[in-house]
Amino acid sequence: MFQIPYETRLKECGSKHLALYLSLRDGISSGLLQPGARLPSTRQLAELYHLSRGSVSLAYEMLAAEGYVRTGIGQGTFVAGRQGQSSLTGSEERKAQPEQSESGPPKPALSAWGRRVTQGTGRSGAAASKAAKAVSGNEGVSFVPRGIGEKGFPWMEWKSAVSAQWRKLGSIADNGWTTEGSDRLRRVIADRLGRERGIRCSSDDIVITGGSMQAIAILSQLLLEEGRTAVVENPGYHGIRSAVYATGAALHPAEVDEEGIIPQDWDAQLLFVTPTRQFPTGAVLRLERRLELLQWAARRGTWIVEDDYDSDFRWGGRPIEPLKSLDKEGRVVYVGSFSRTMRSEVRIGYAVLPEALRACFIQAKRLYDPYPEGIAEQNALADWIADGGYDRHLRRMRRVFHKLQERLRLGLGERLAELFEIVPSDAGLTLFAYWRGNEESYKLLQEKSKQLGAVWQDGKKYAMADGKRRPSALFGFAHLDEKEIDLGIARIGAAAGELGLIPHNDQGGSNHA
Image 1: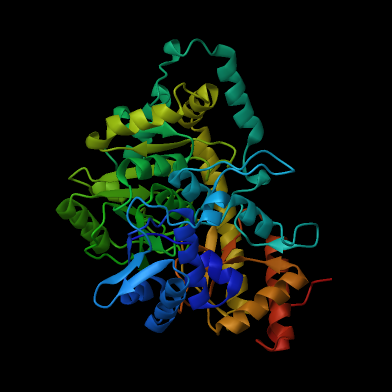
Image 2 (image 1 turned 30 degrees about the vertical axis):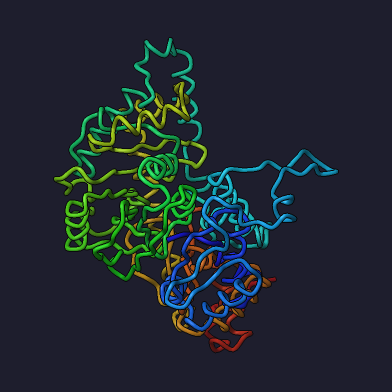
């Protein structure tokens, strides 16, 4: 299977068959779909993108009429041209060559990998930042997730710990530095994972990374390529989809319900999963399903990447056993990050690797990081954890964020329960909610709320394929205070009242002056 920018084109033109035609044409013109390559059947494409077979057939007919594909009764549909032959016309080939722009340097002729990376499938950081700032300023309230906020991190304590490390820093060799990262930090993490997560590992099993996404990207490049398949949660984190897409591998979206990912006997080489707190829904994967995933991986001889997202901020229920703690066959890579609990600027993550993947992962990381970076920060974090400072920070933040989550949950429940169905969650820094009405009313409320000074993250941003997916919303609260949460909910309520979605006396105030 191949990947095409269907979702992007659909947002641009609004027509399903036209979006499919344009995205297939783009793939052929760019060389992602090579001459002679067989395209999926109308049934397969219809299932993949939740289209009617008629829409797919119409797109194929348009491509055939323009010479992009050739078809044969009972044979299938193929990209026009022979294997190894360029599928571009003369004028298109000239366009594909580097061009000297009057206002800048020549455009590079990128490799297939380069084109996939720059095209991507997920939402860019710039786009996310734009959404977060859509109502920026003193009067705007944004529920778009932004991390723990400036007030939530003890900067002076952290700066003091880092400064102390810089003062006593010796040579790299003297500090036990290798590509794997600080020996001290890896030992501290191994001890902490044993106590907090029930994961038995040694420091040799751990590699320090520049955040969890670096580990995910390296694993994707090591284990995936064209012709292979990765299973990703749907909805799920767009960064994982982008990492898979860049390798040329196929993406298989696995549906998620109130109990997490729904296991199947996938024909795939890699699975990405967030079992302790599914992103973005917050669902917890029950034990039976976790065991099913492990059995699948052992039976298929495949790998599971467990992203332990947001599990440090838990204030109810018992701690969830990670897949890694249940893994007897060595099929799970456990990925964690300190960026979520500290600040996004602190780019320290880690991967706990099975023995079979350890050496190749280190070699791959060495390609990007031939010399160790963040020496002082890693040793400072090791000391901060060992001295109890990190745990004190977590306890303090758990109290703060639990109070904020309750404020948001109660506010949504009391004022907007007729509109949003909140997914229960006893952890994390976001709340996920399904819209009770139709998509048209959801979009109207989004726009009206934005006009009144309140925005949230559209759940569609985390989903693959358009289909008949229920509208949903993600509310982040860690960067807000109680007054801002109340004000944001009041503005959404006021917007709903103006639209007639709820009675005016249920708005909870229209404080949007």
